[in-house]
Amino acid sequence: MRWLLALVLLAGPVRAETPPAPPMAERLLPGERDGFVTDAARGCWLWLGGLSDLAADVEARWSGACPDGPAEGAGRALFLWREGRAVRGMVYEGVMKGGRPDGRGALAYLRNGEPTMTEAGDYTKDGLVRGRVEVLVQGLVYEGALSDGVPHGPGMLRSAGGSVAGIWASGCLPLPGGAWAAFLRPEEGCAAAED
Image (cartoon, rainbow, N blue to C red; front, side, top):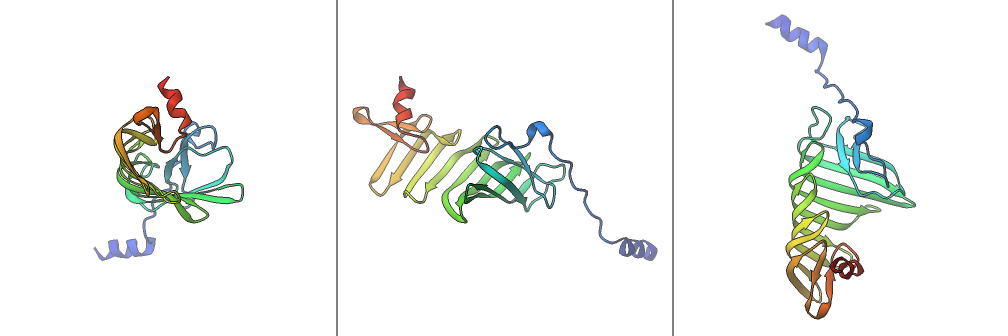
């Protein structure tokens, strides 16, 4: 038994192998397709989407496990990139499955290190499906169902001027008199979507 302990001590700690890189067809191409970004230090894959073609120098970091490449389980993900002179980023804390948020989590969007928007709630591979979204600069808070990153289903939008609640469709809520409330999309698109 002593010789086994001595052998382990001489060999040093067992190092985990770096996971293989994600397939080319599943890697992020800003402005073209969503995809995996690799944590350069650990080889973990993290899914990122919605970046414009102006995004450059995209980096990712993951604090949790990634036994086969994609991030798995609880952890903290940090994404950073440049758009012109601005440094953009996102911080996600929660559960990942297959490299994507899946379960309870919270996400903060950053511009030059300062949060501009936060969201928290229940995530699937398609994004936040139920929770709270706050646009900090505008003082807007939405709580309810979401799909494709916008309110969809029952929800309430609050601002300093009051609140509106109802059944949202693709980020739009019809109001009395033919008006619309829009959140996370242009209001002009609401009337066009109804036609």
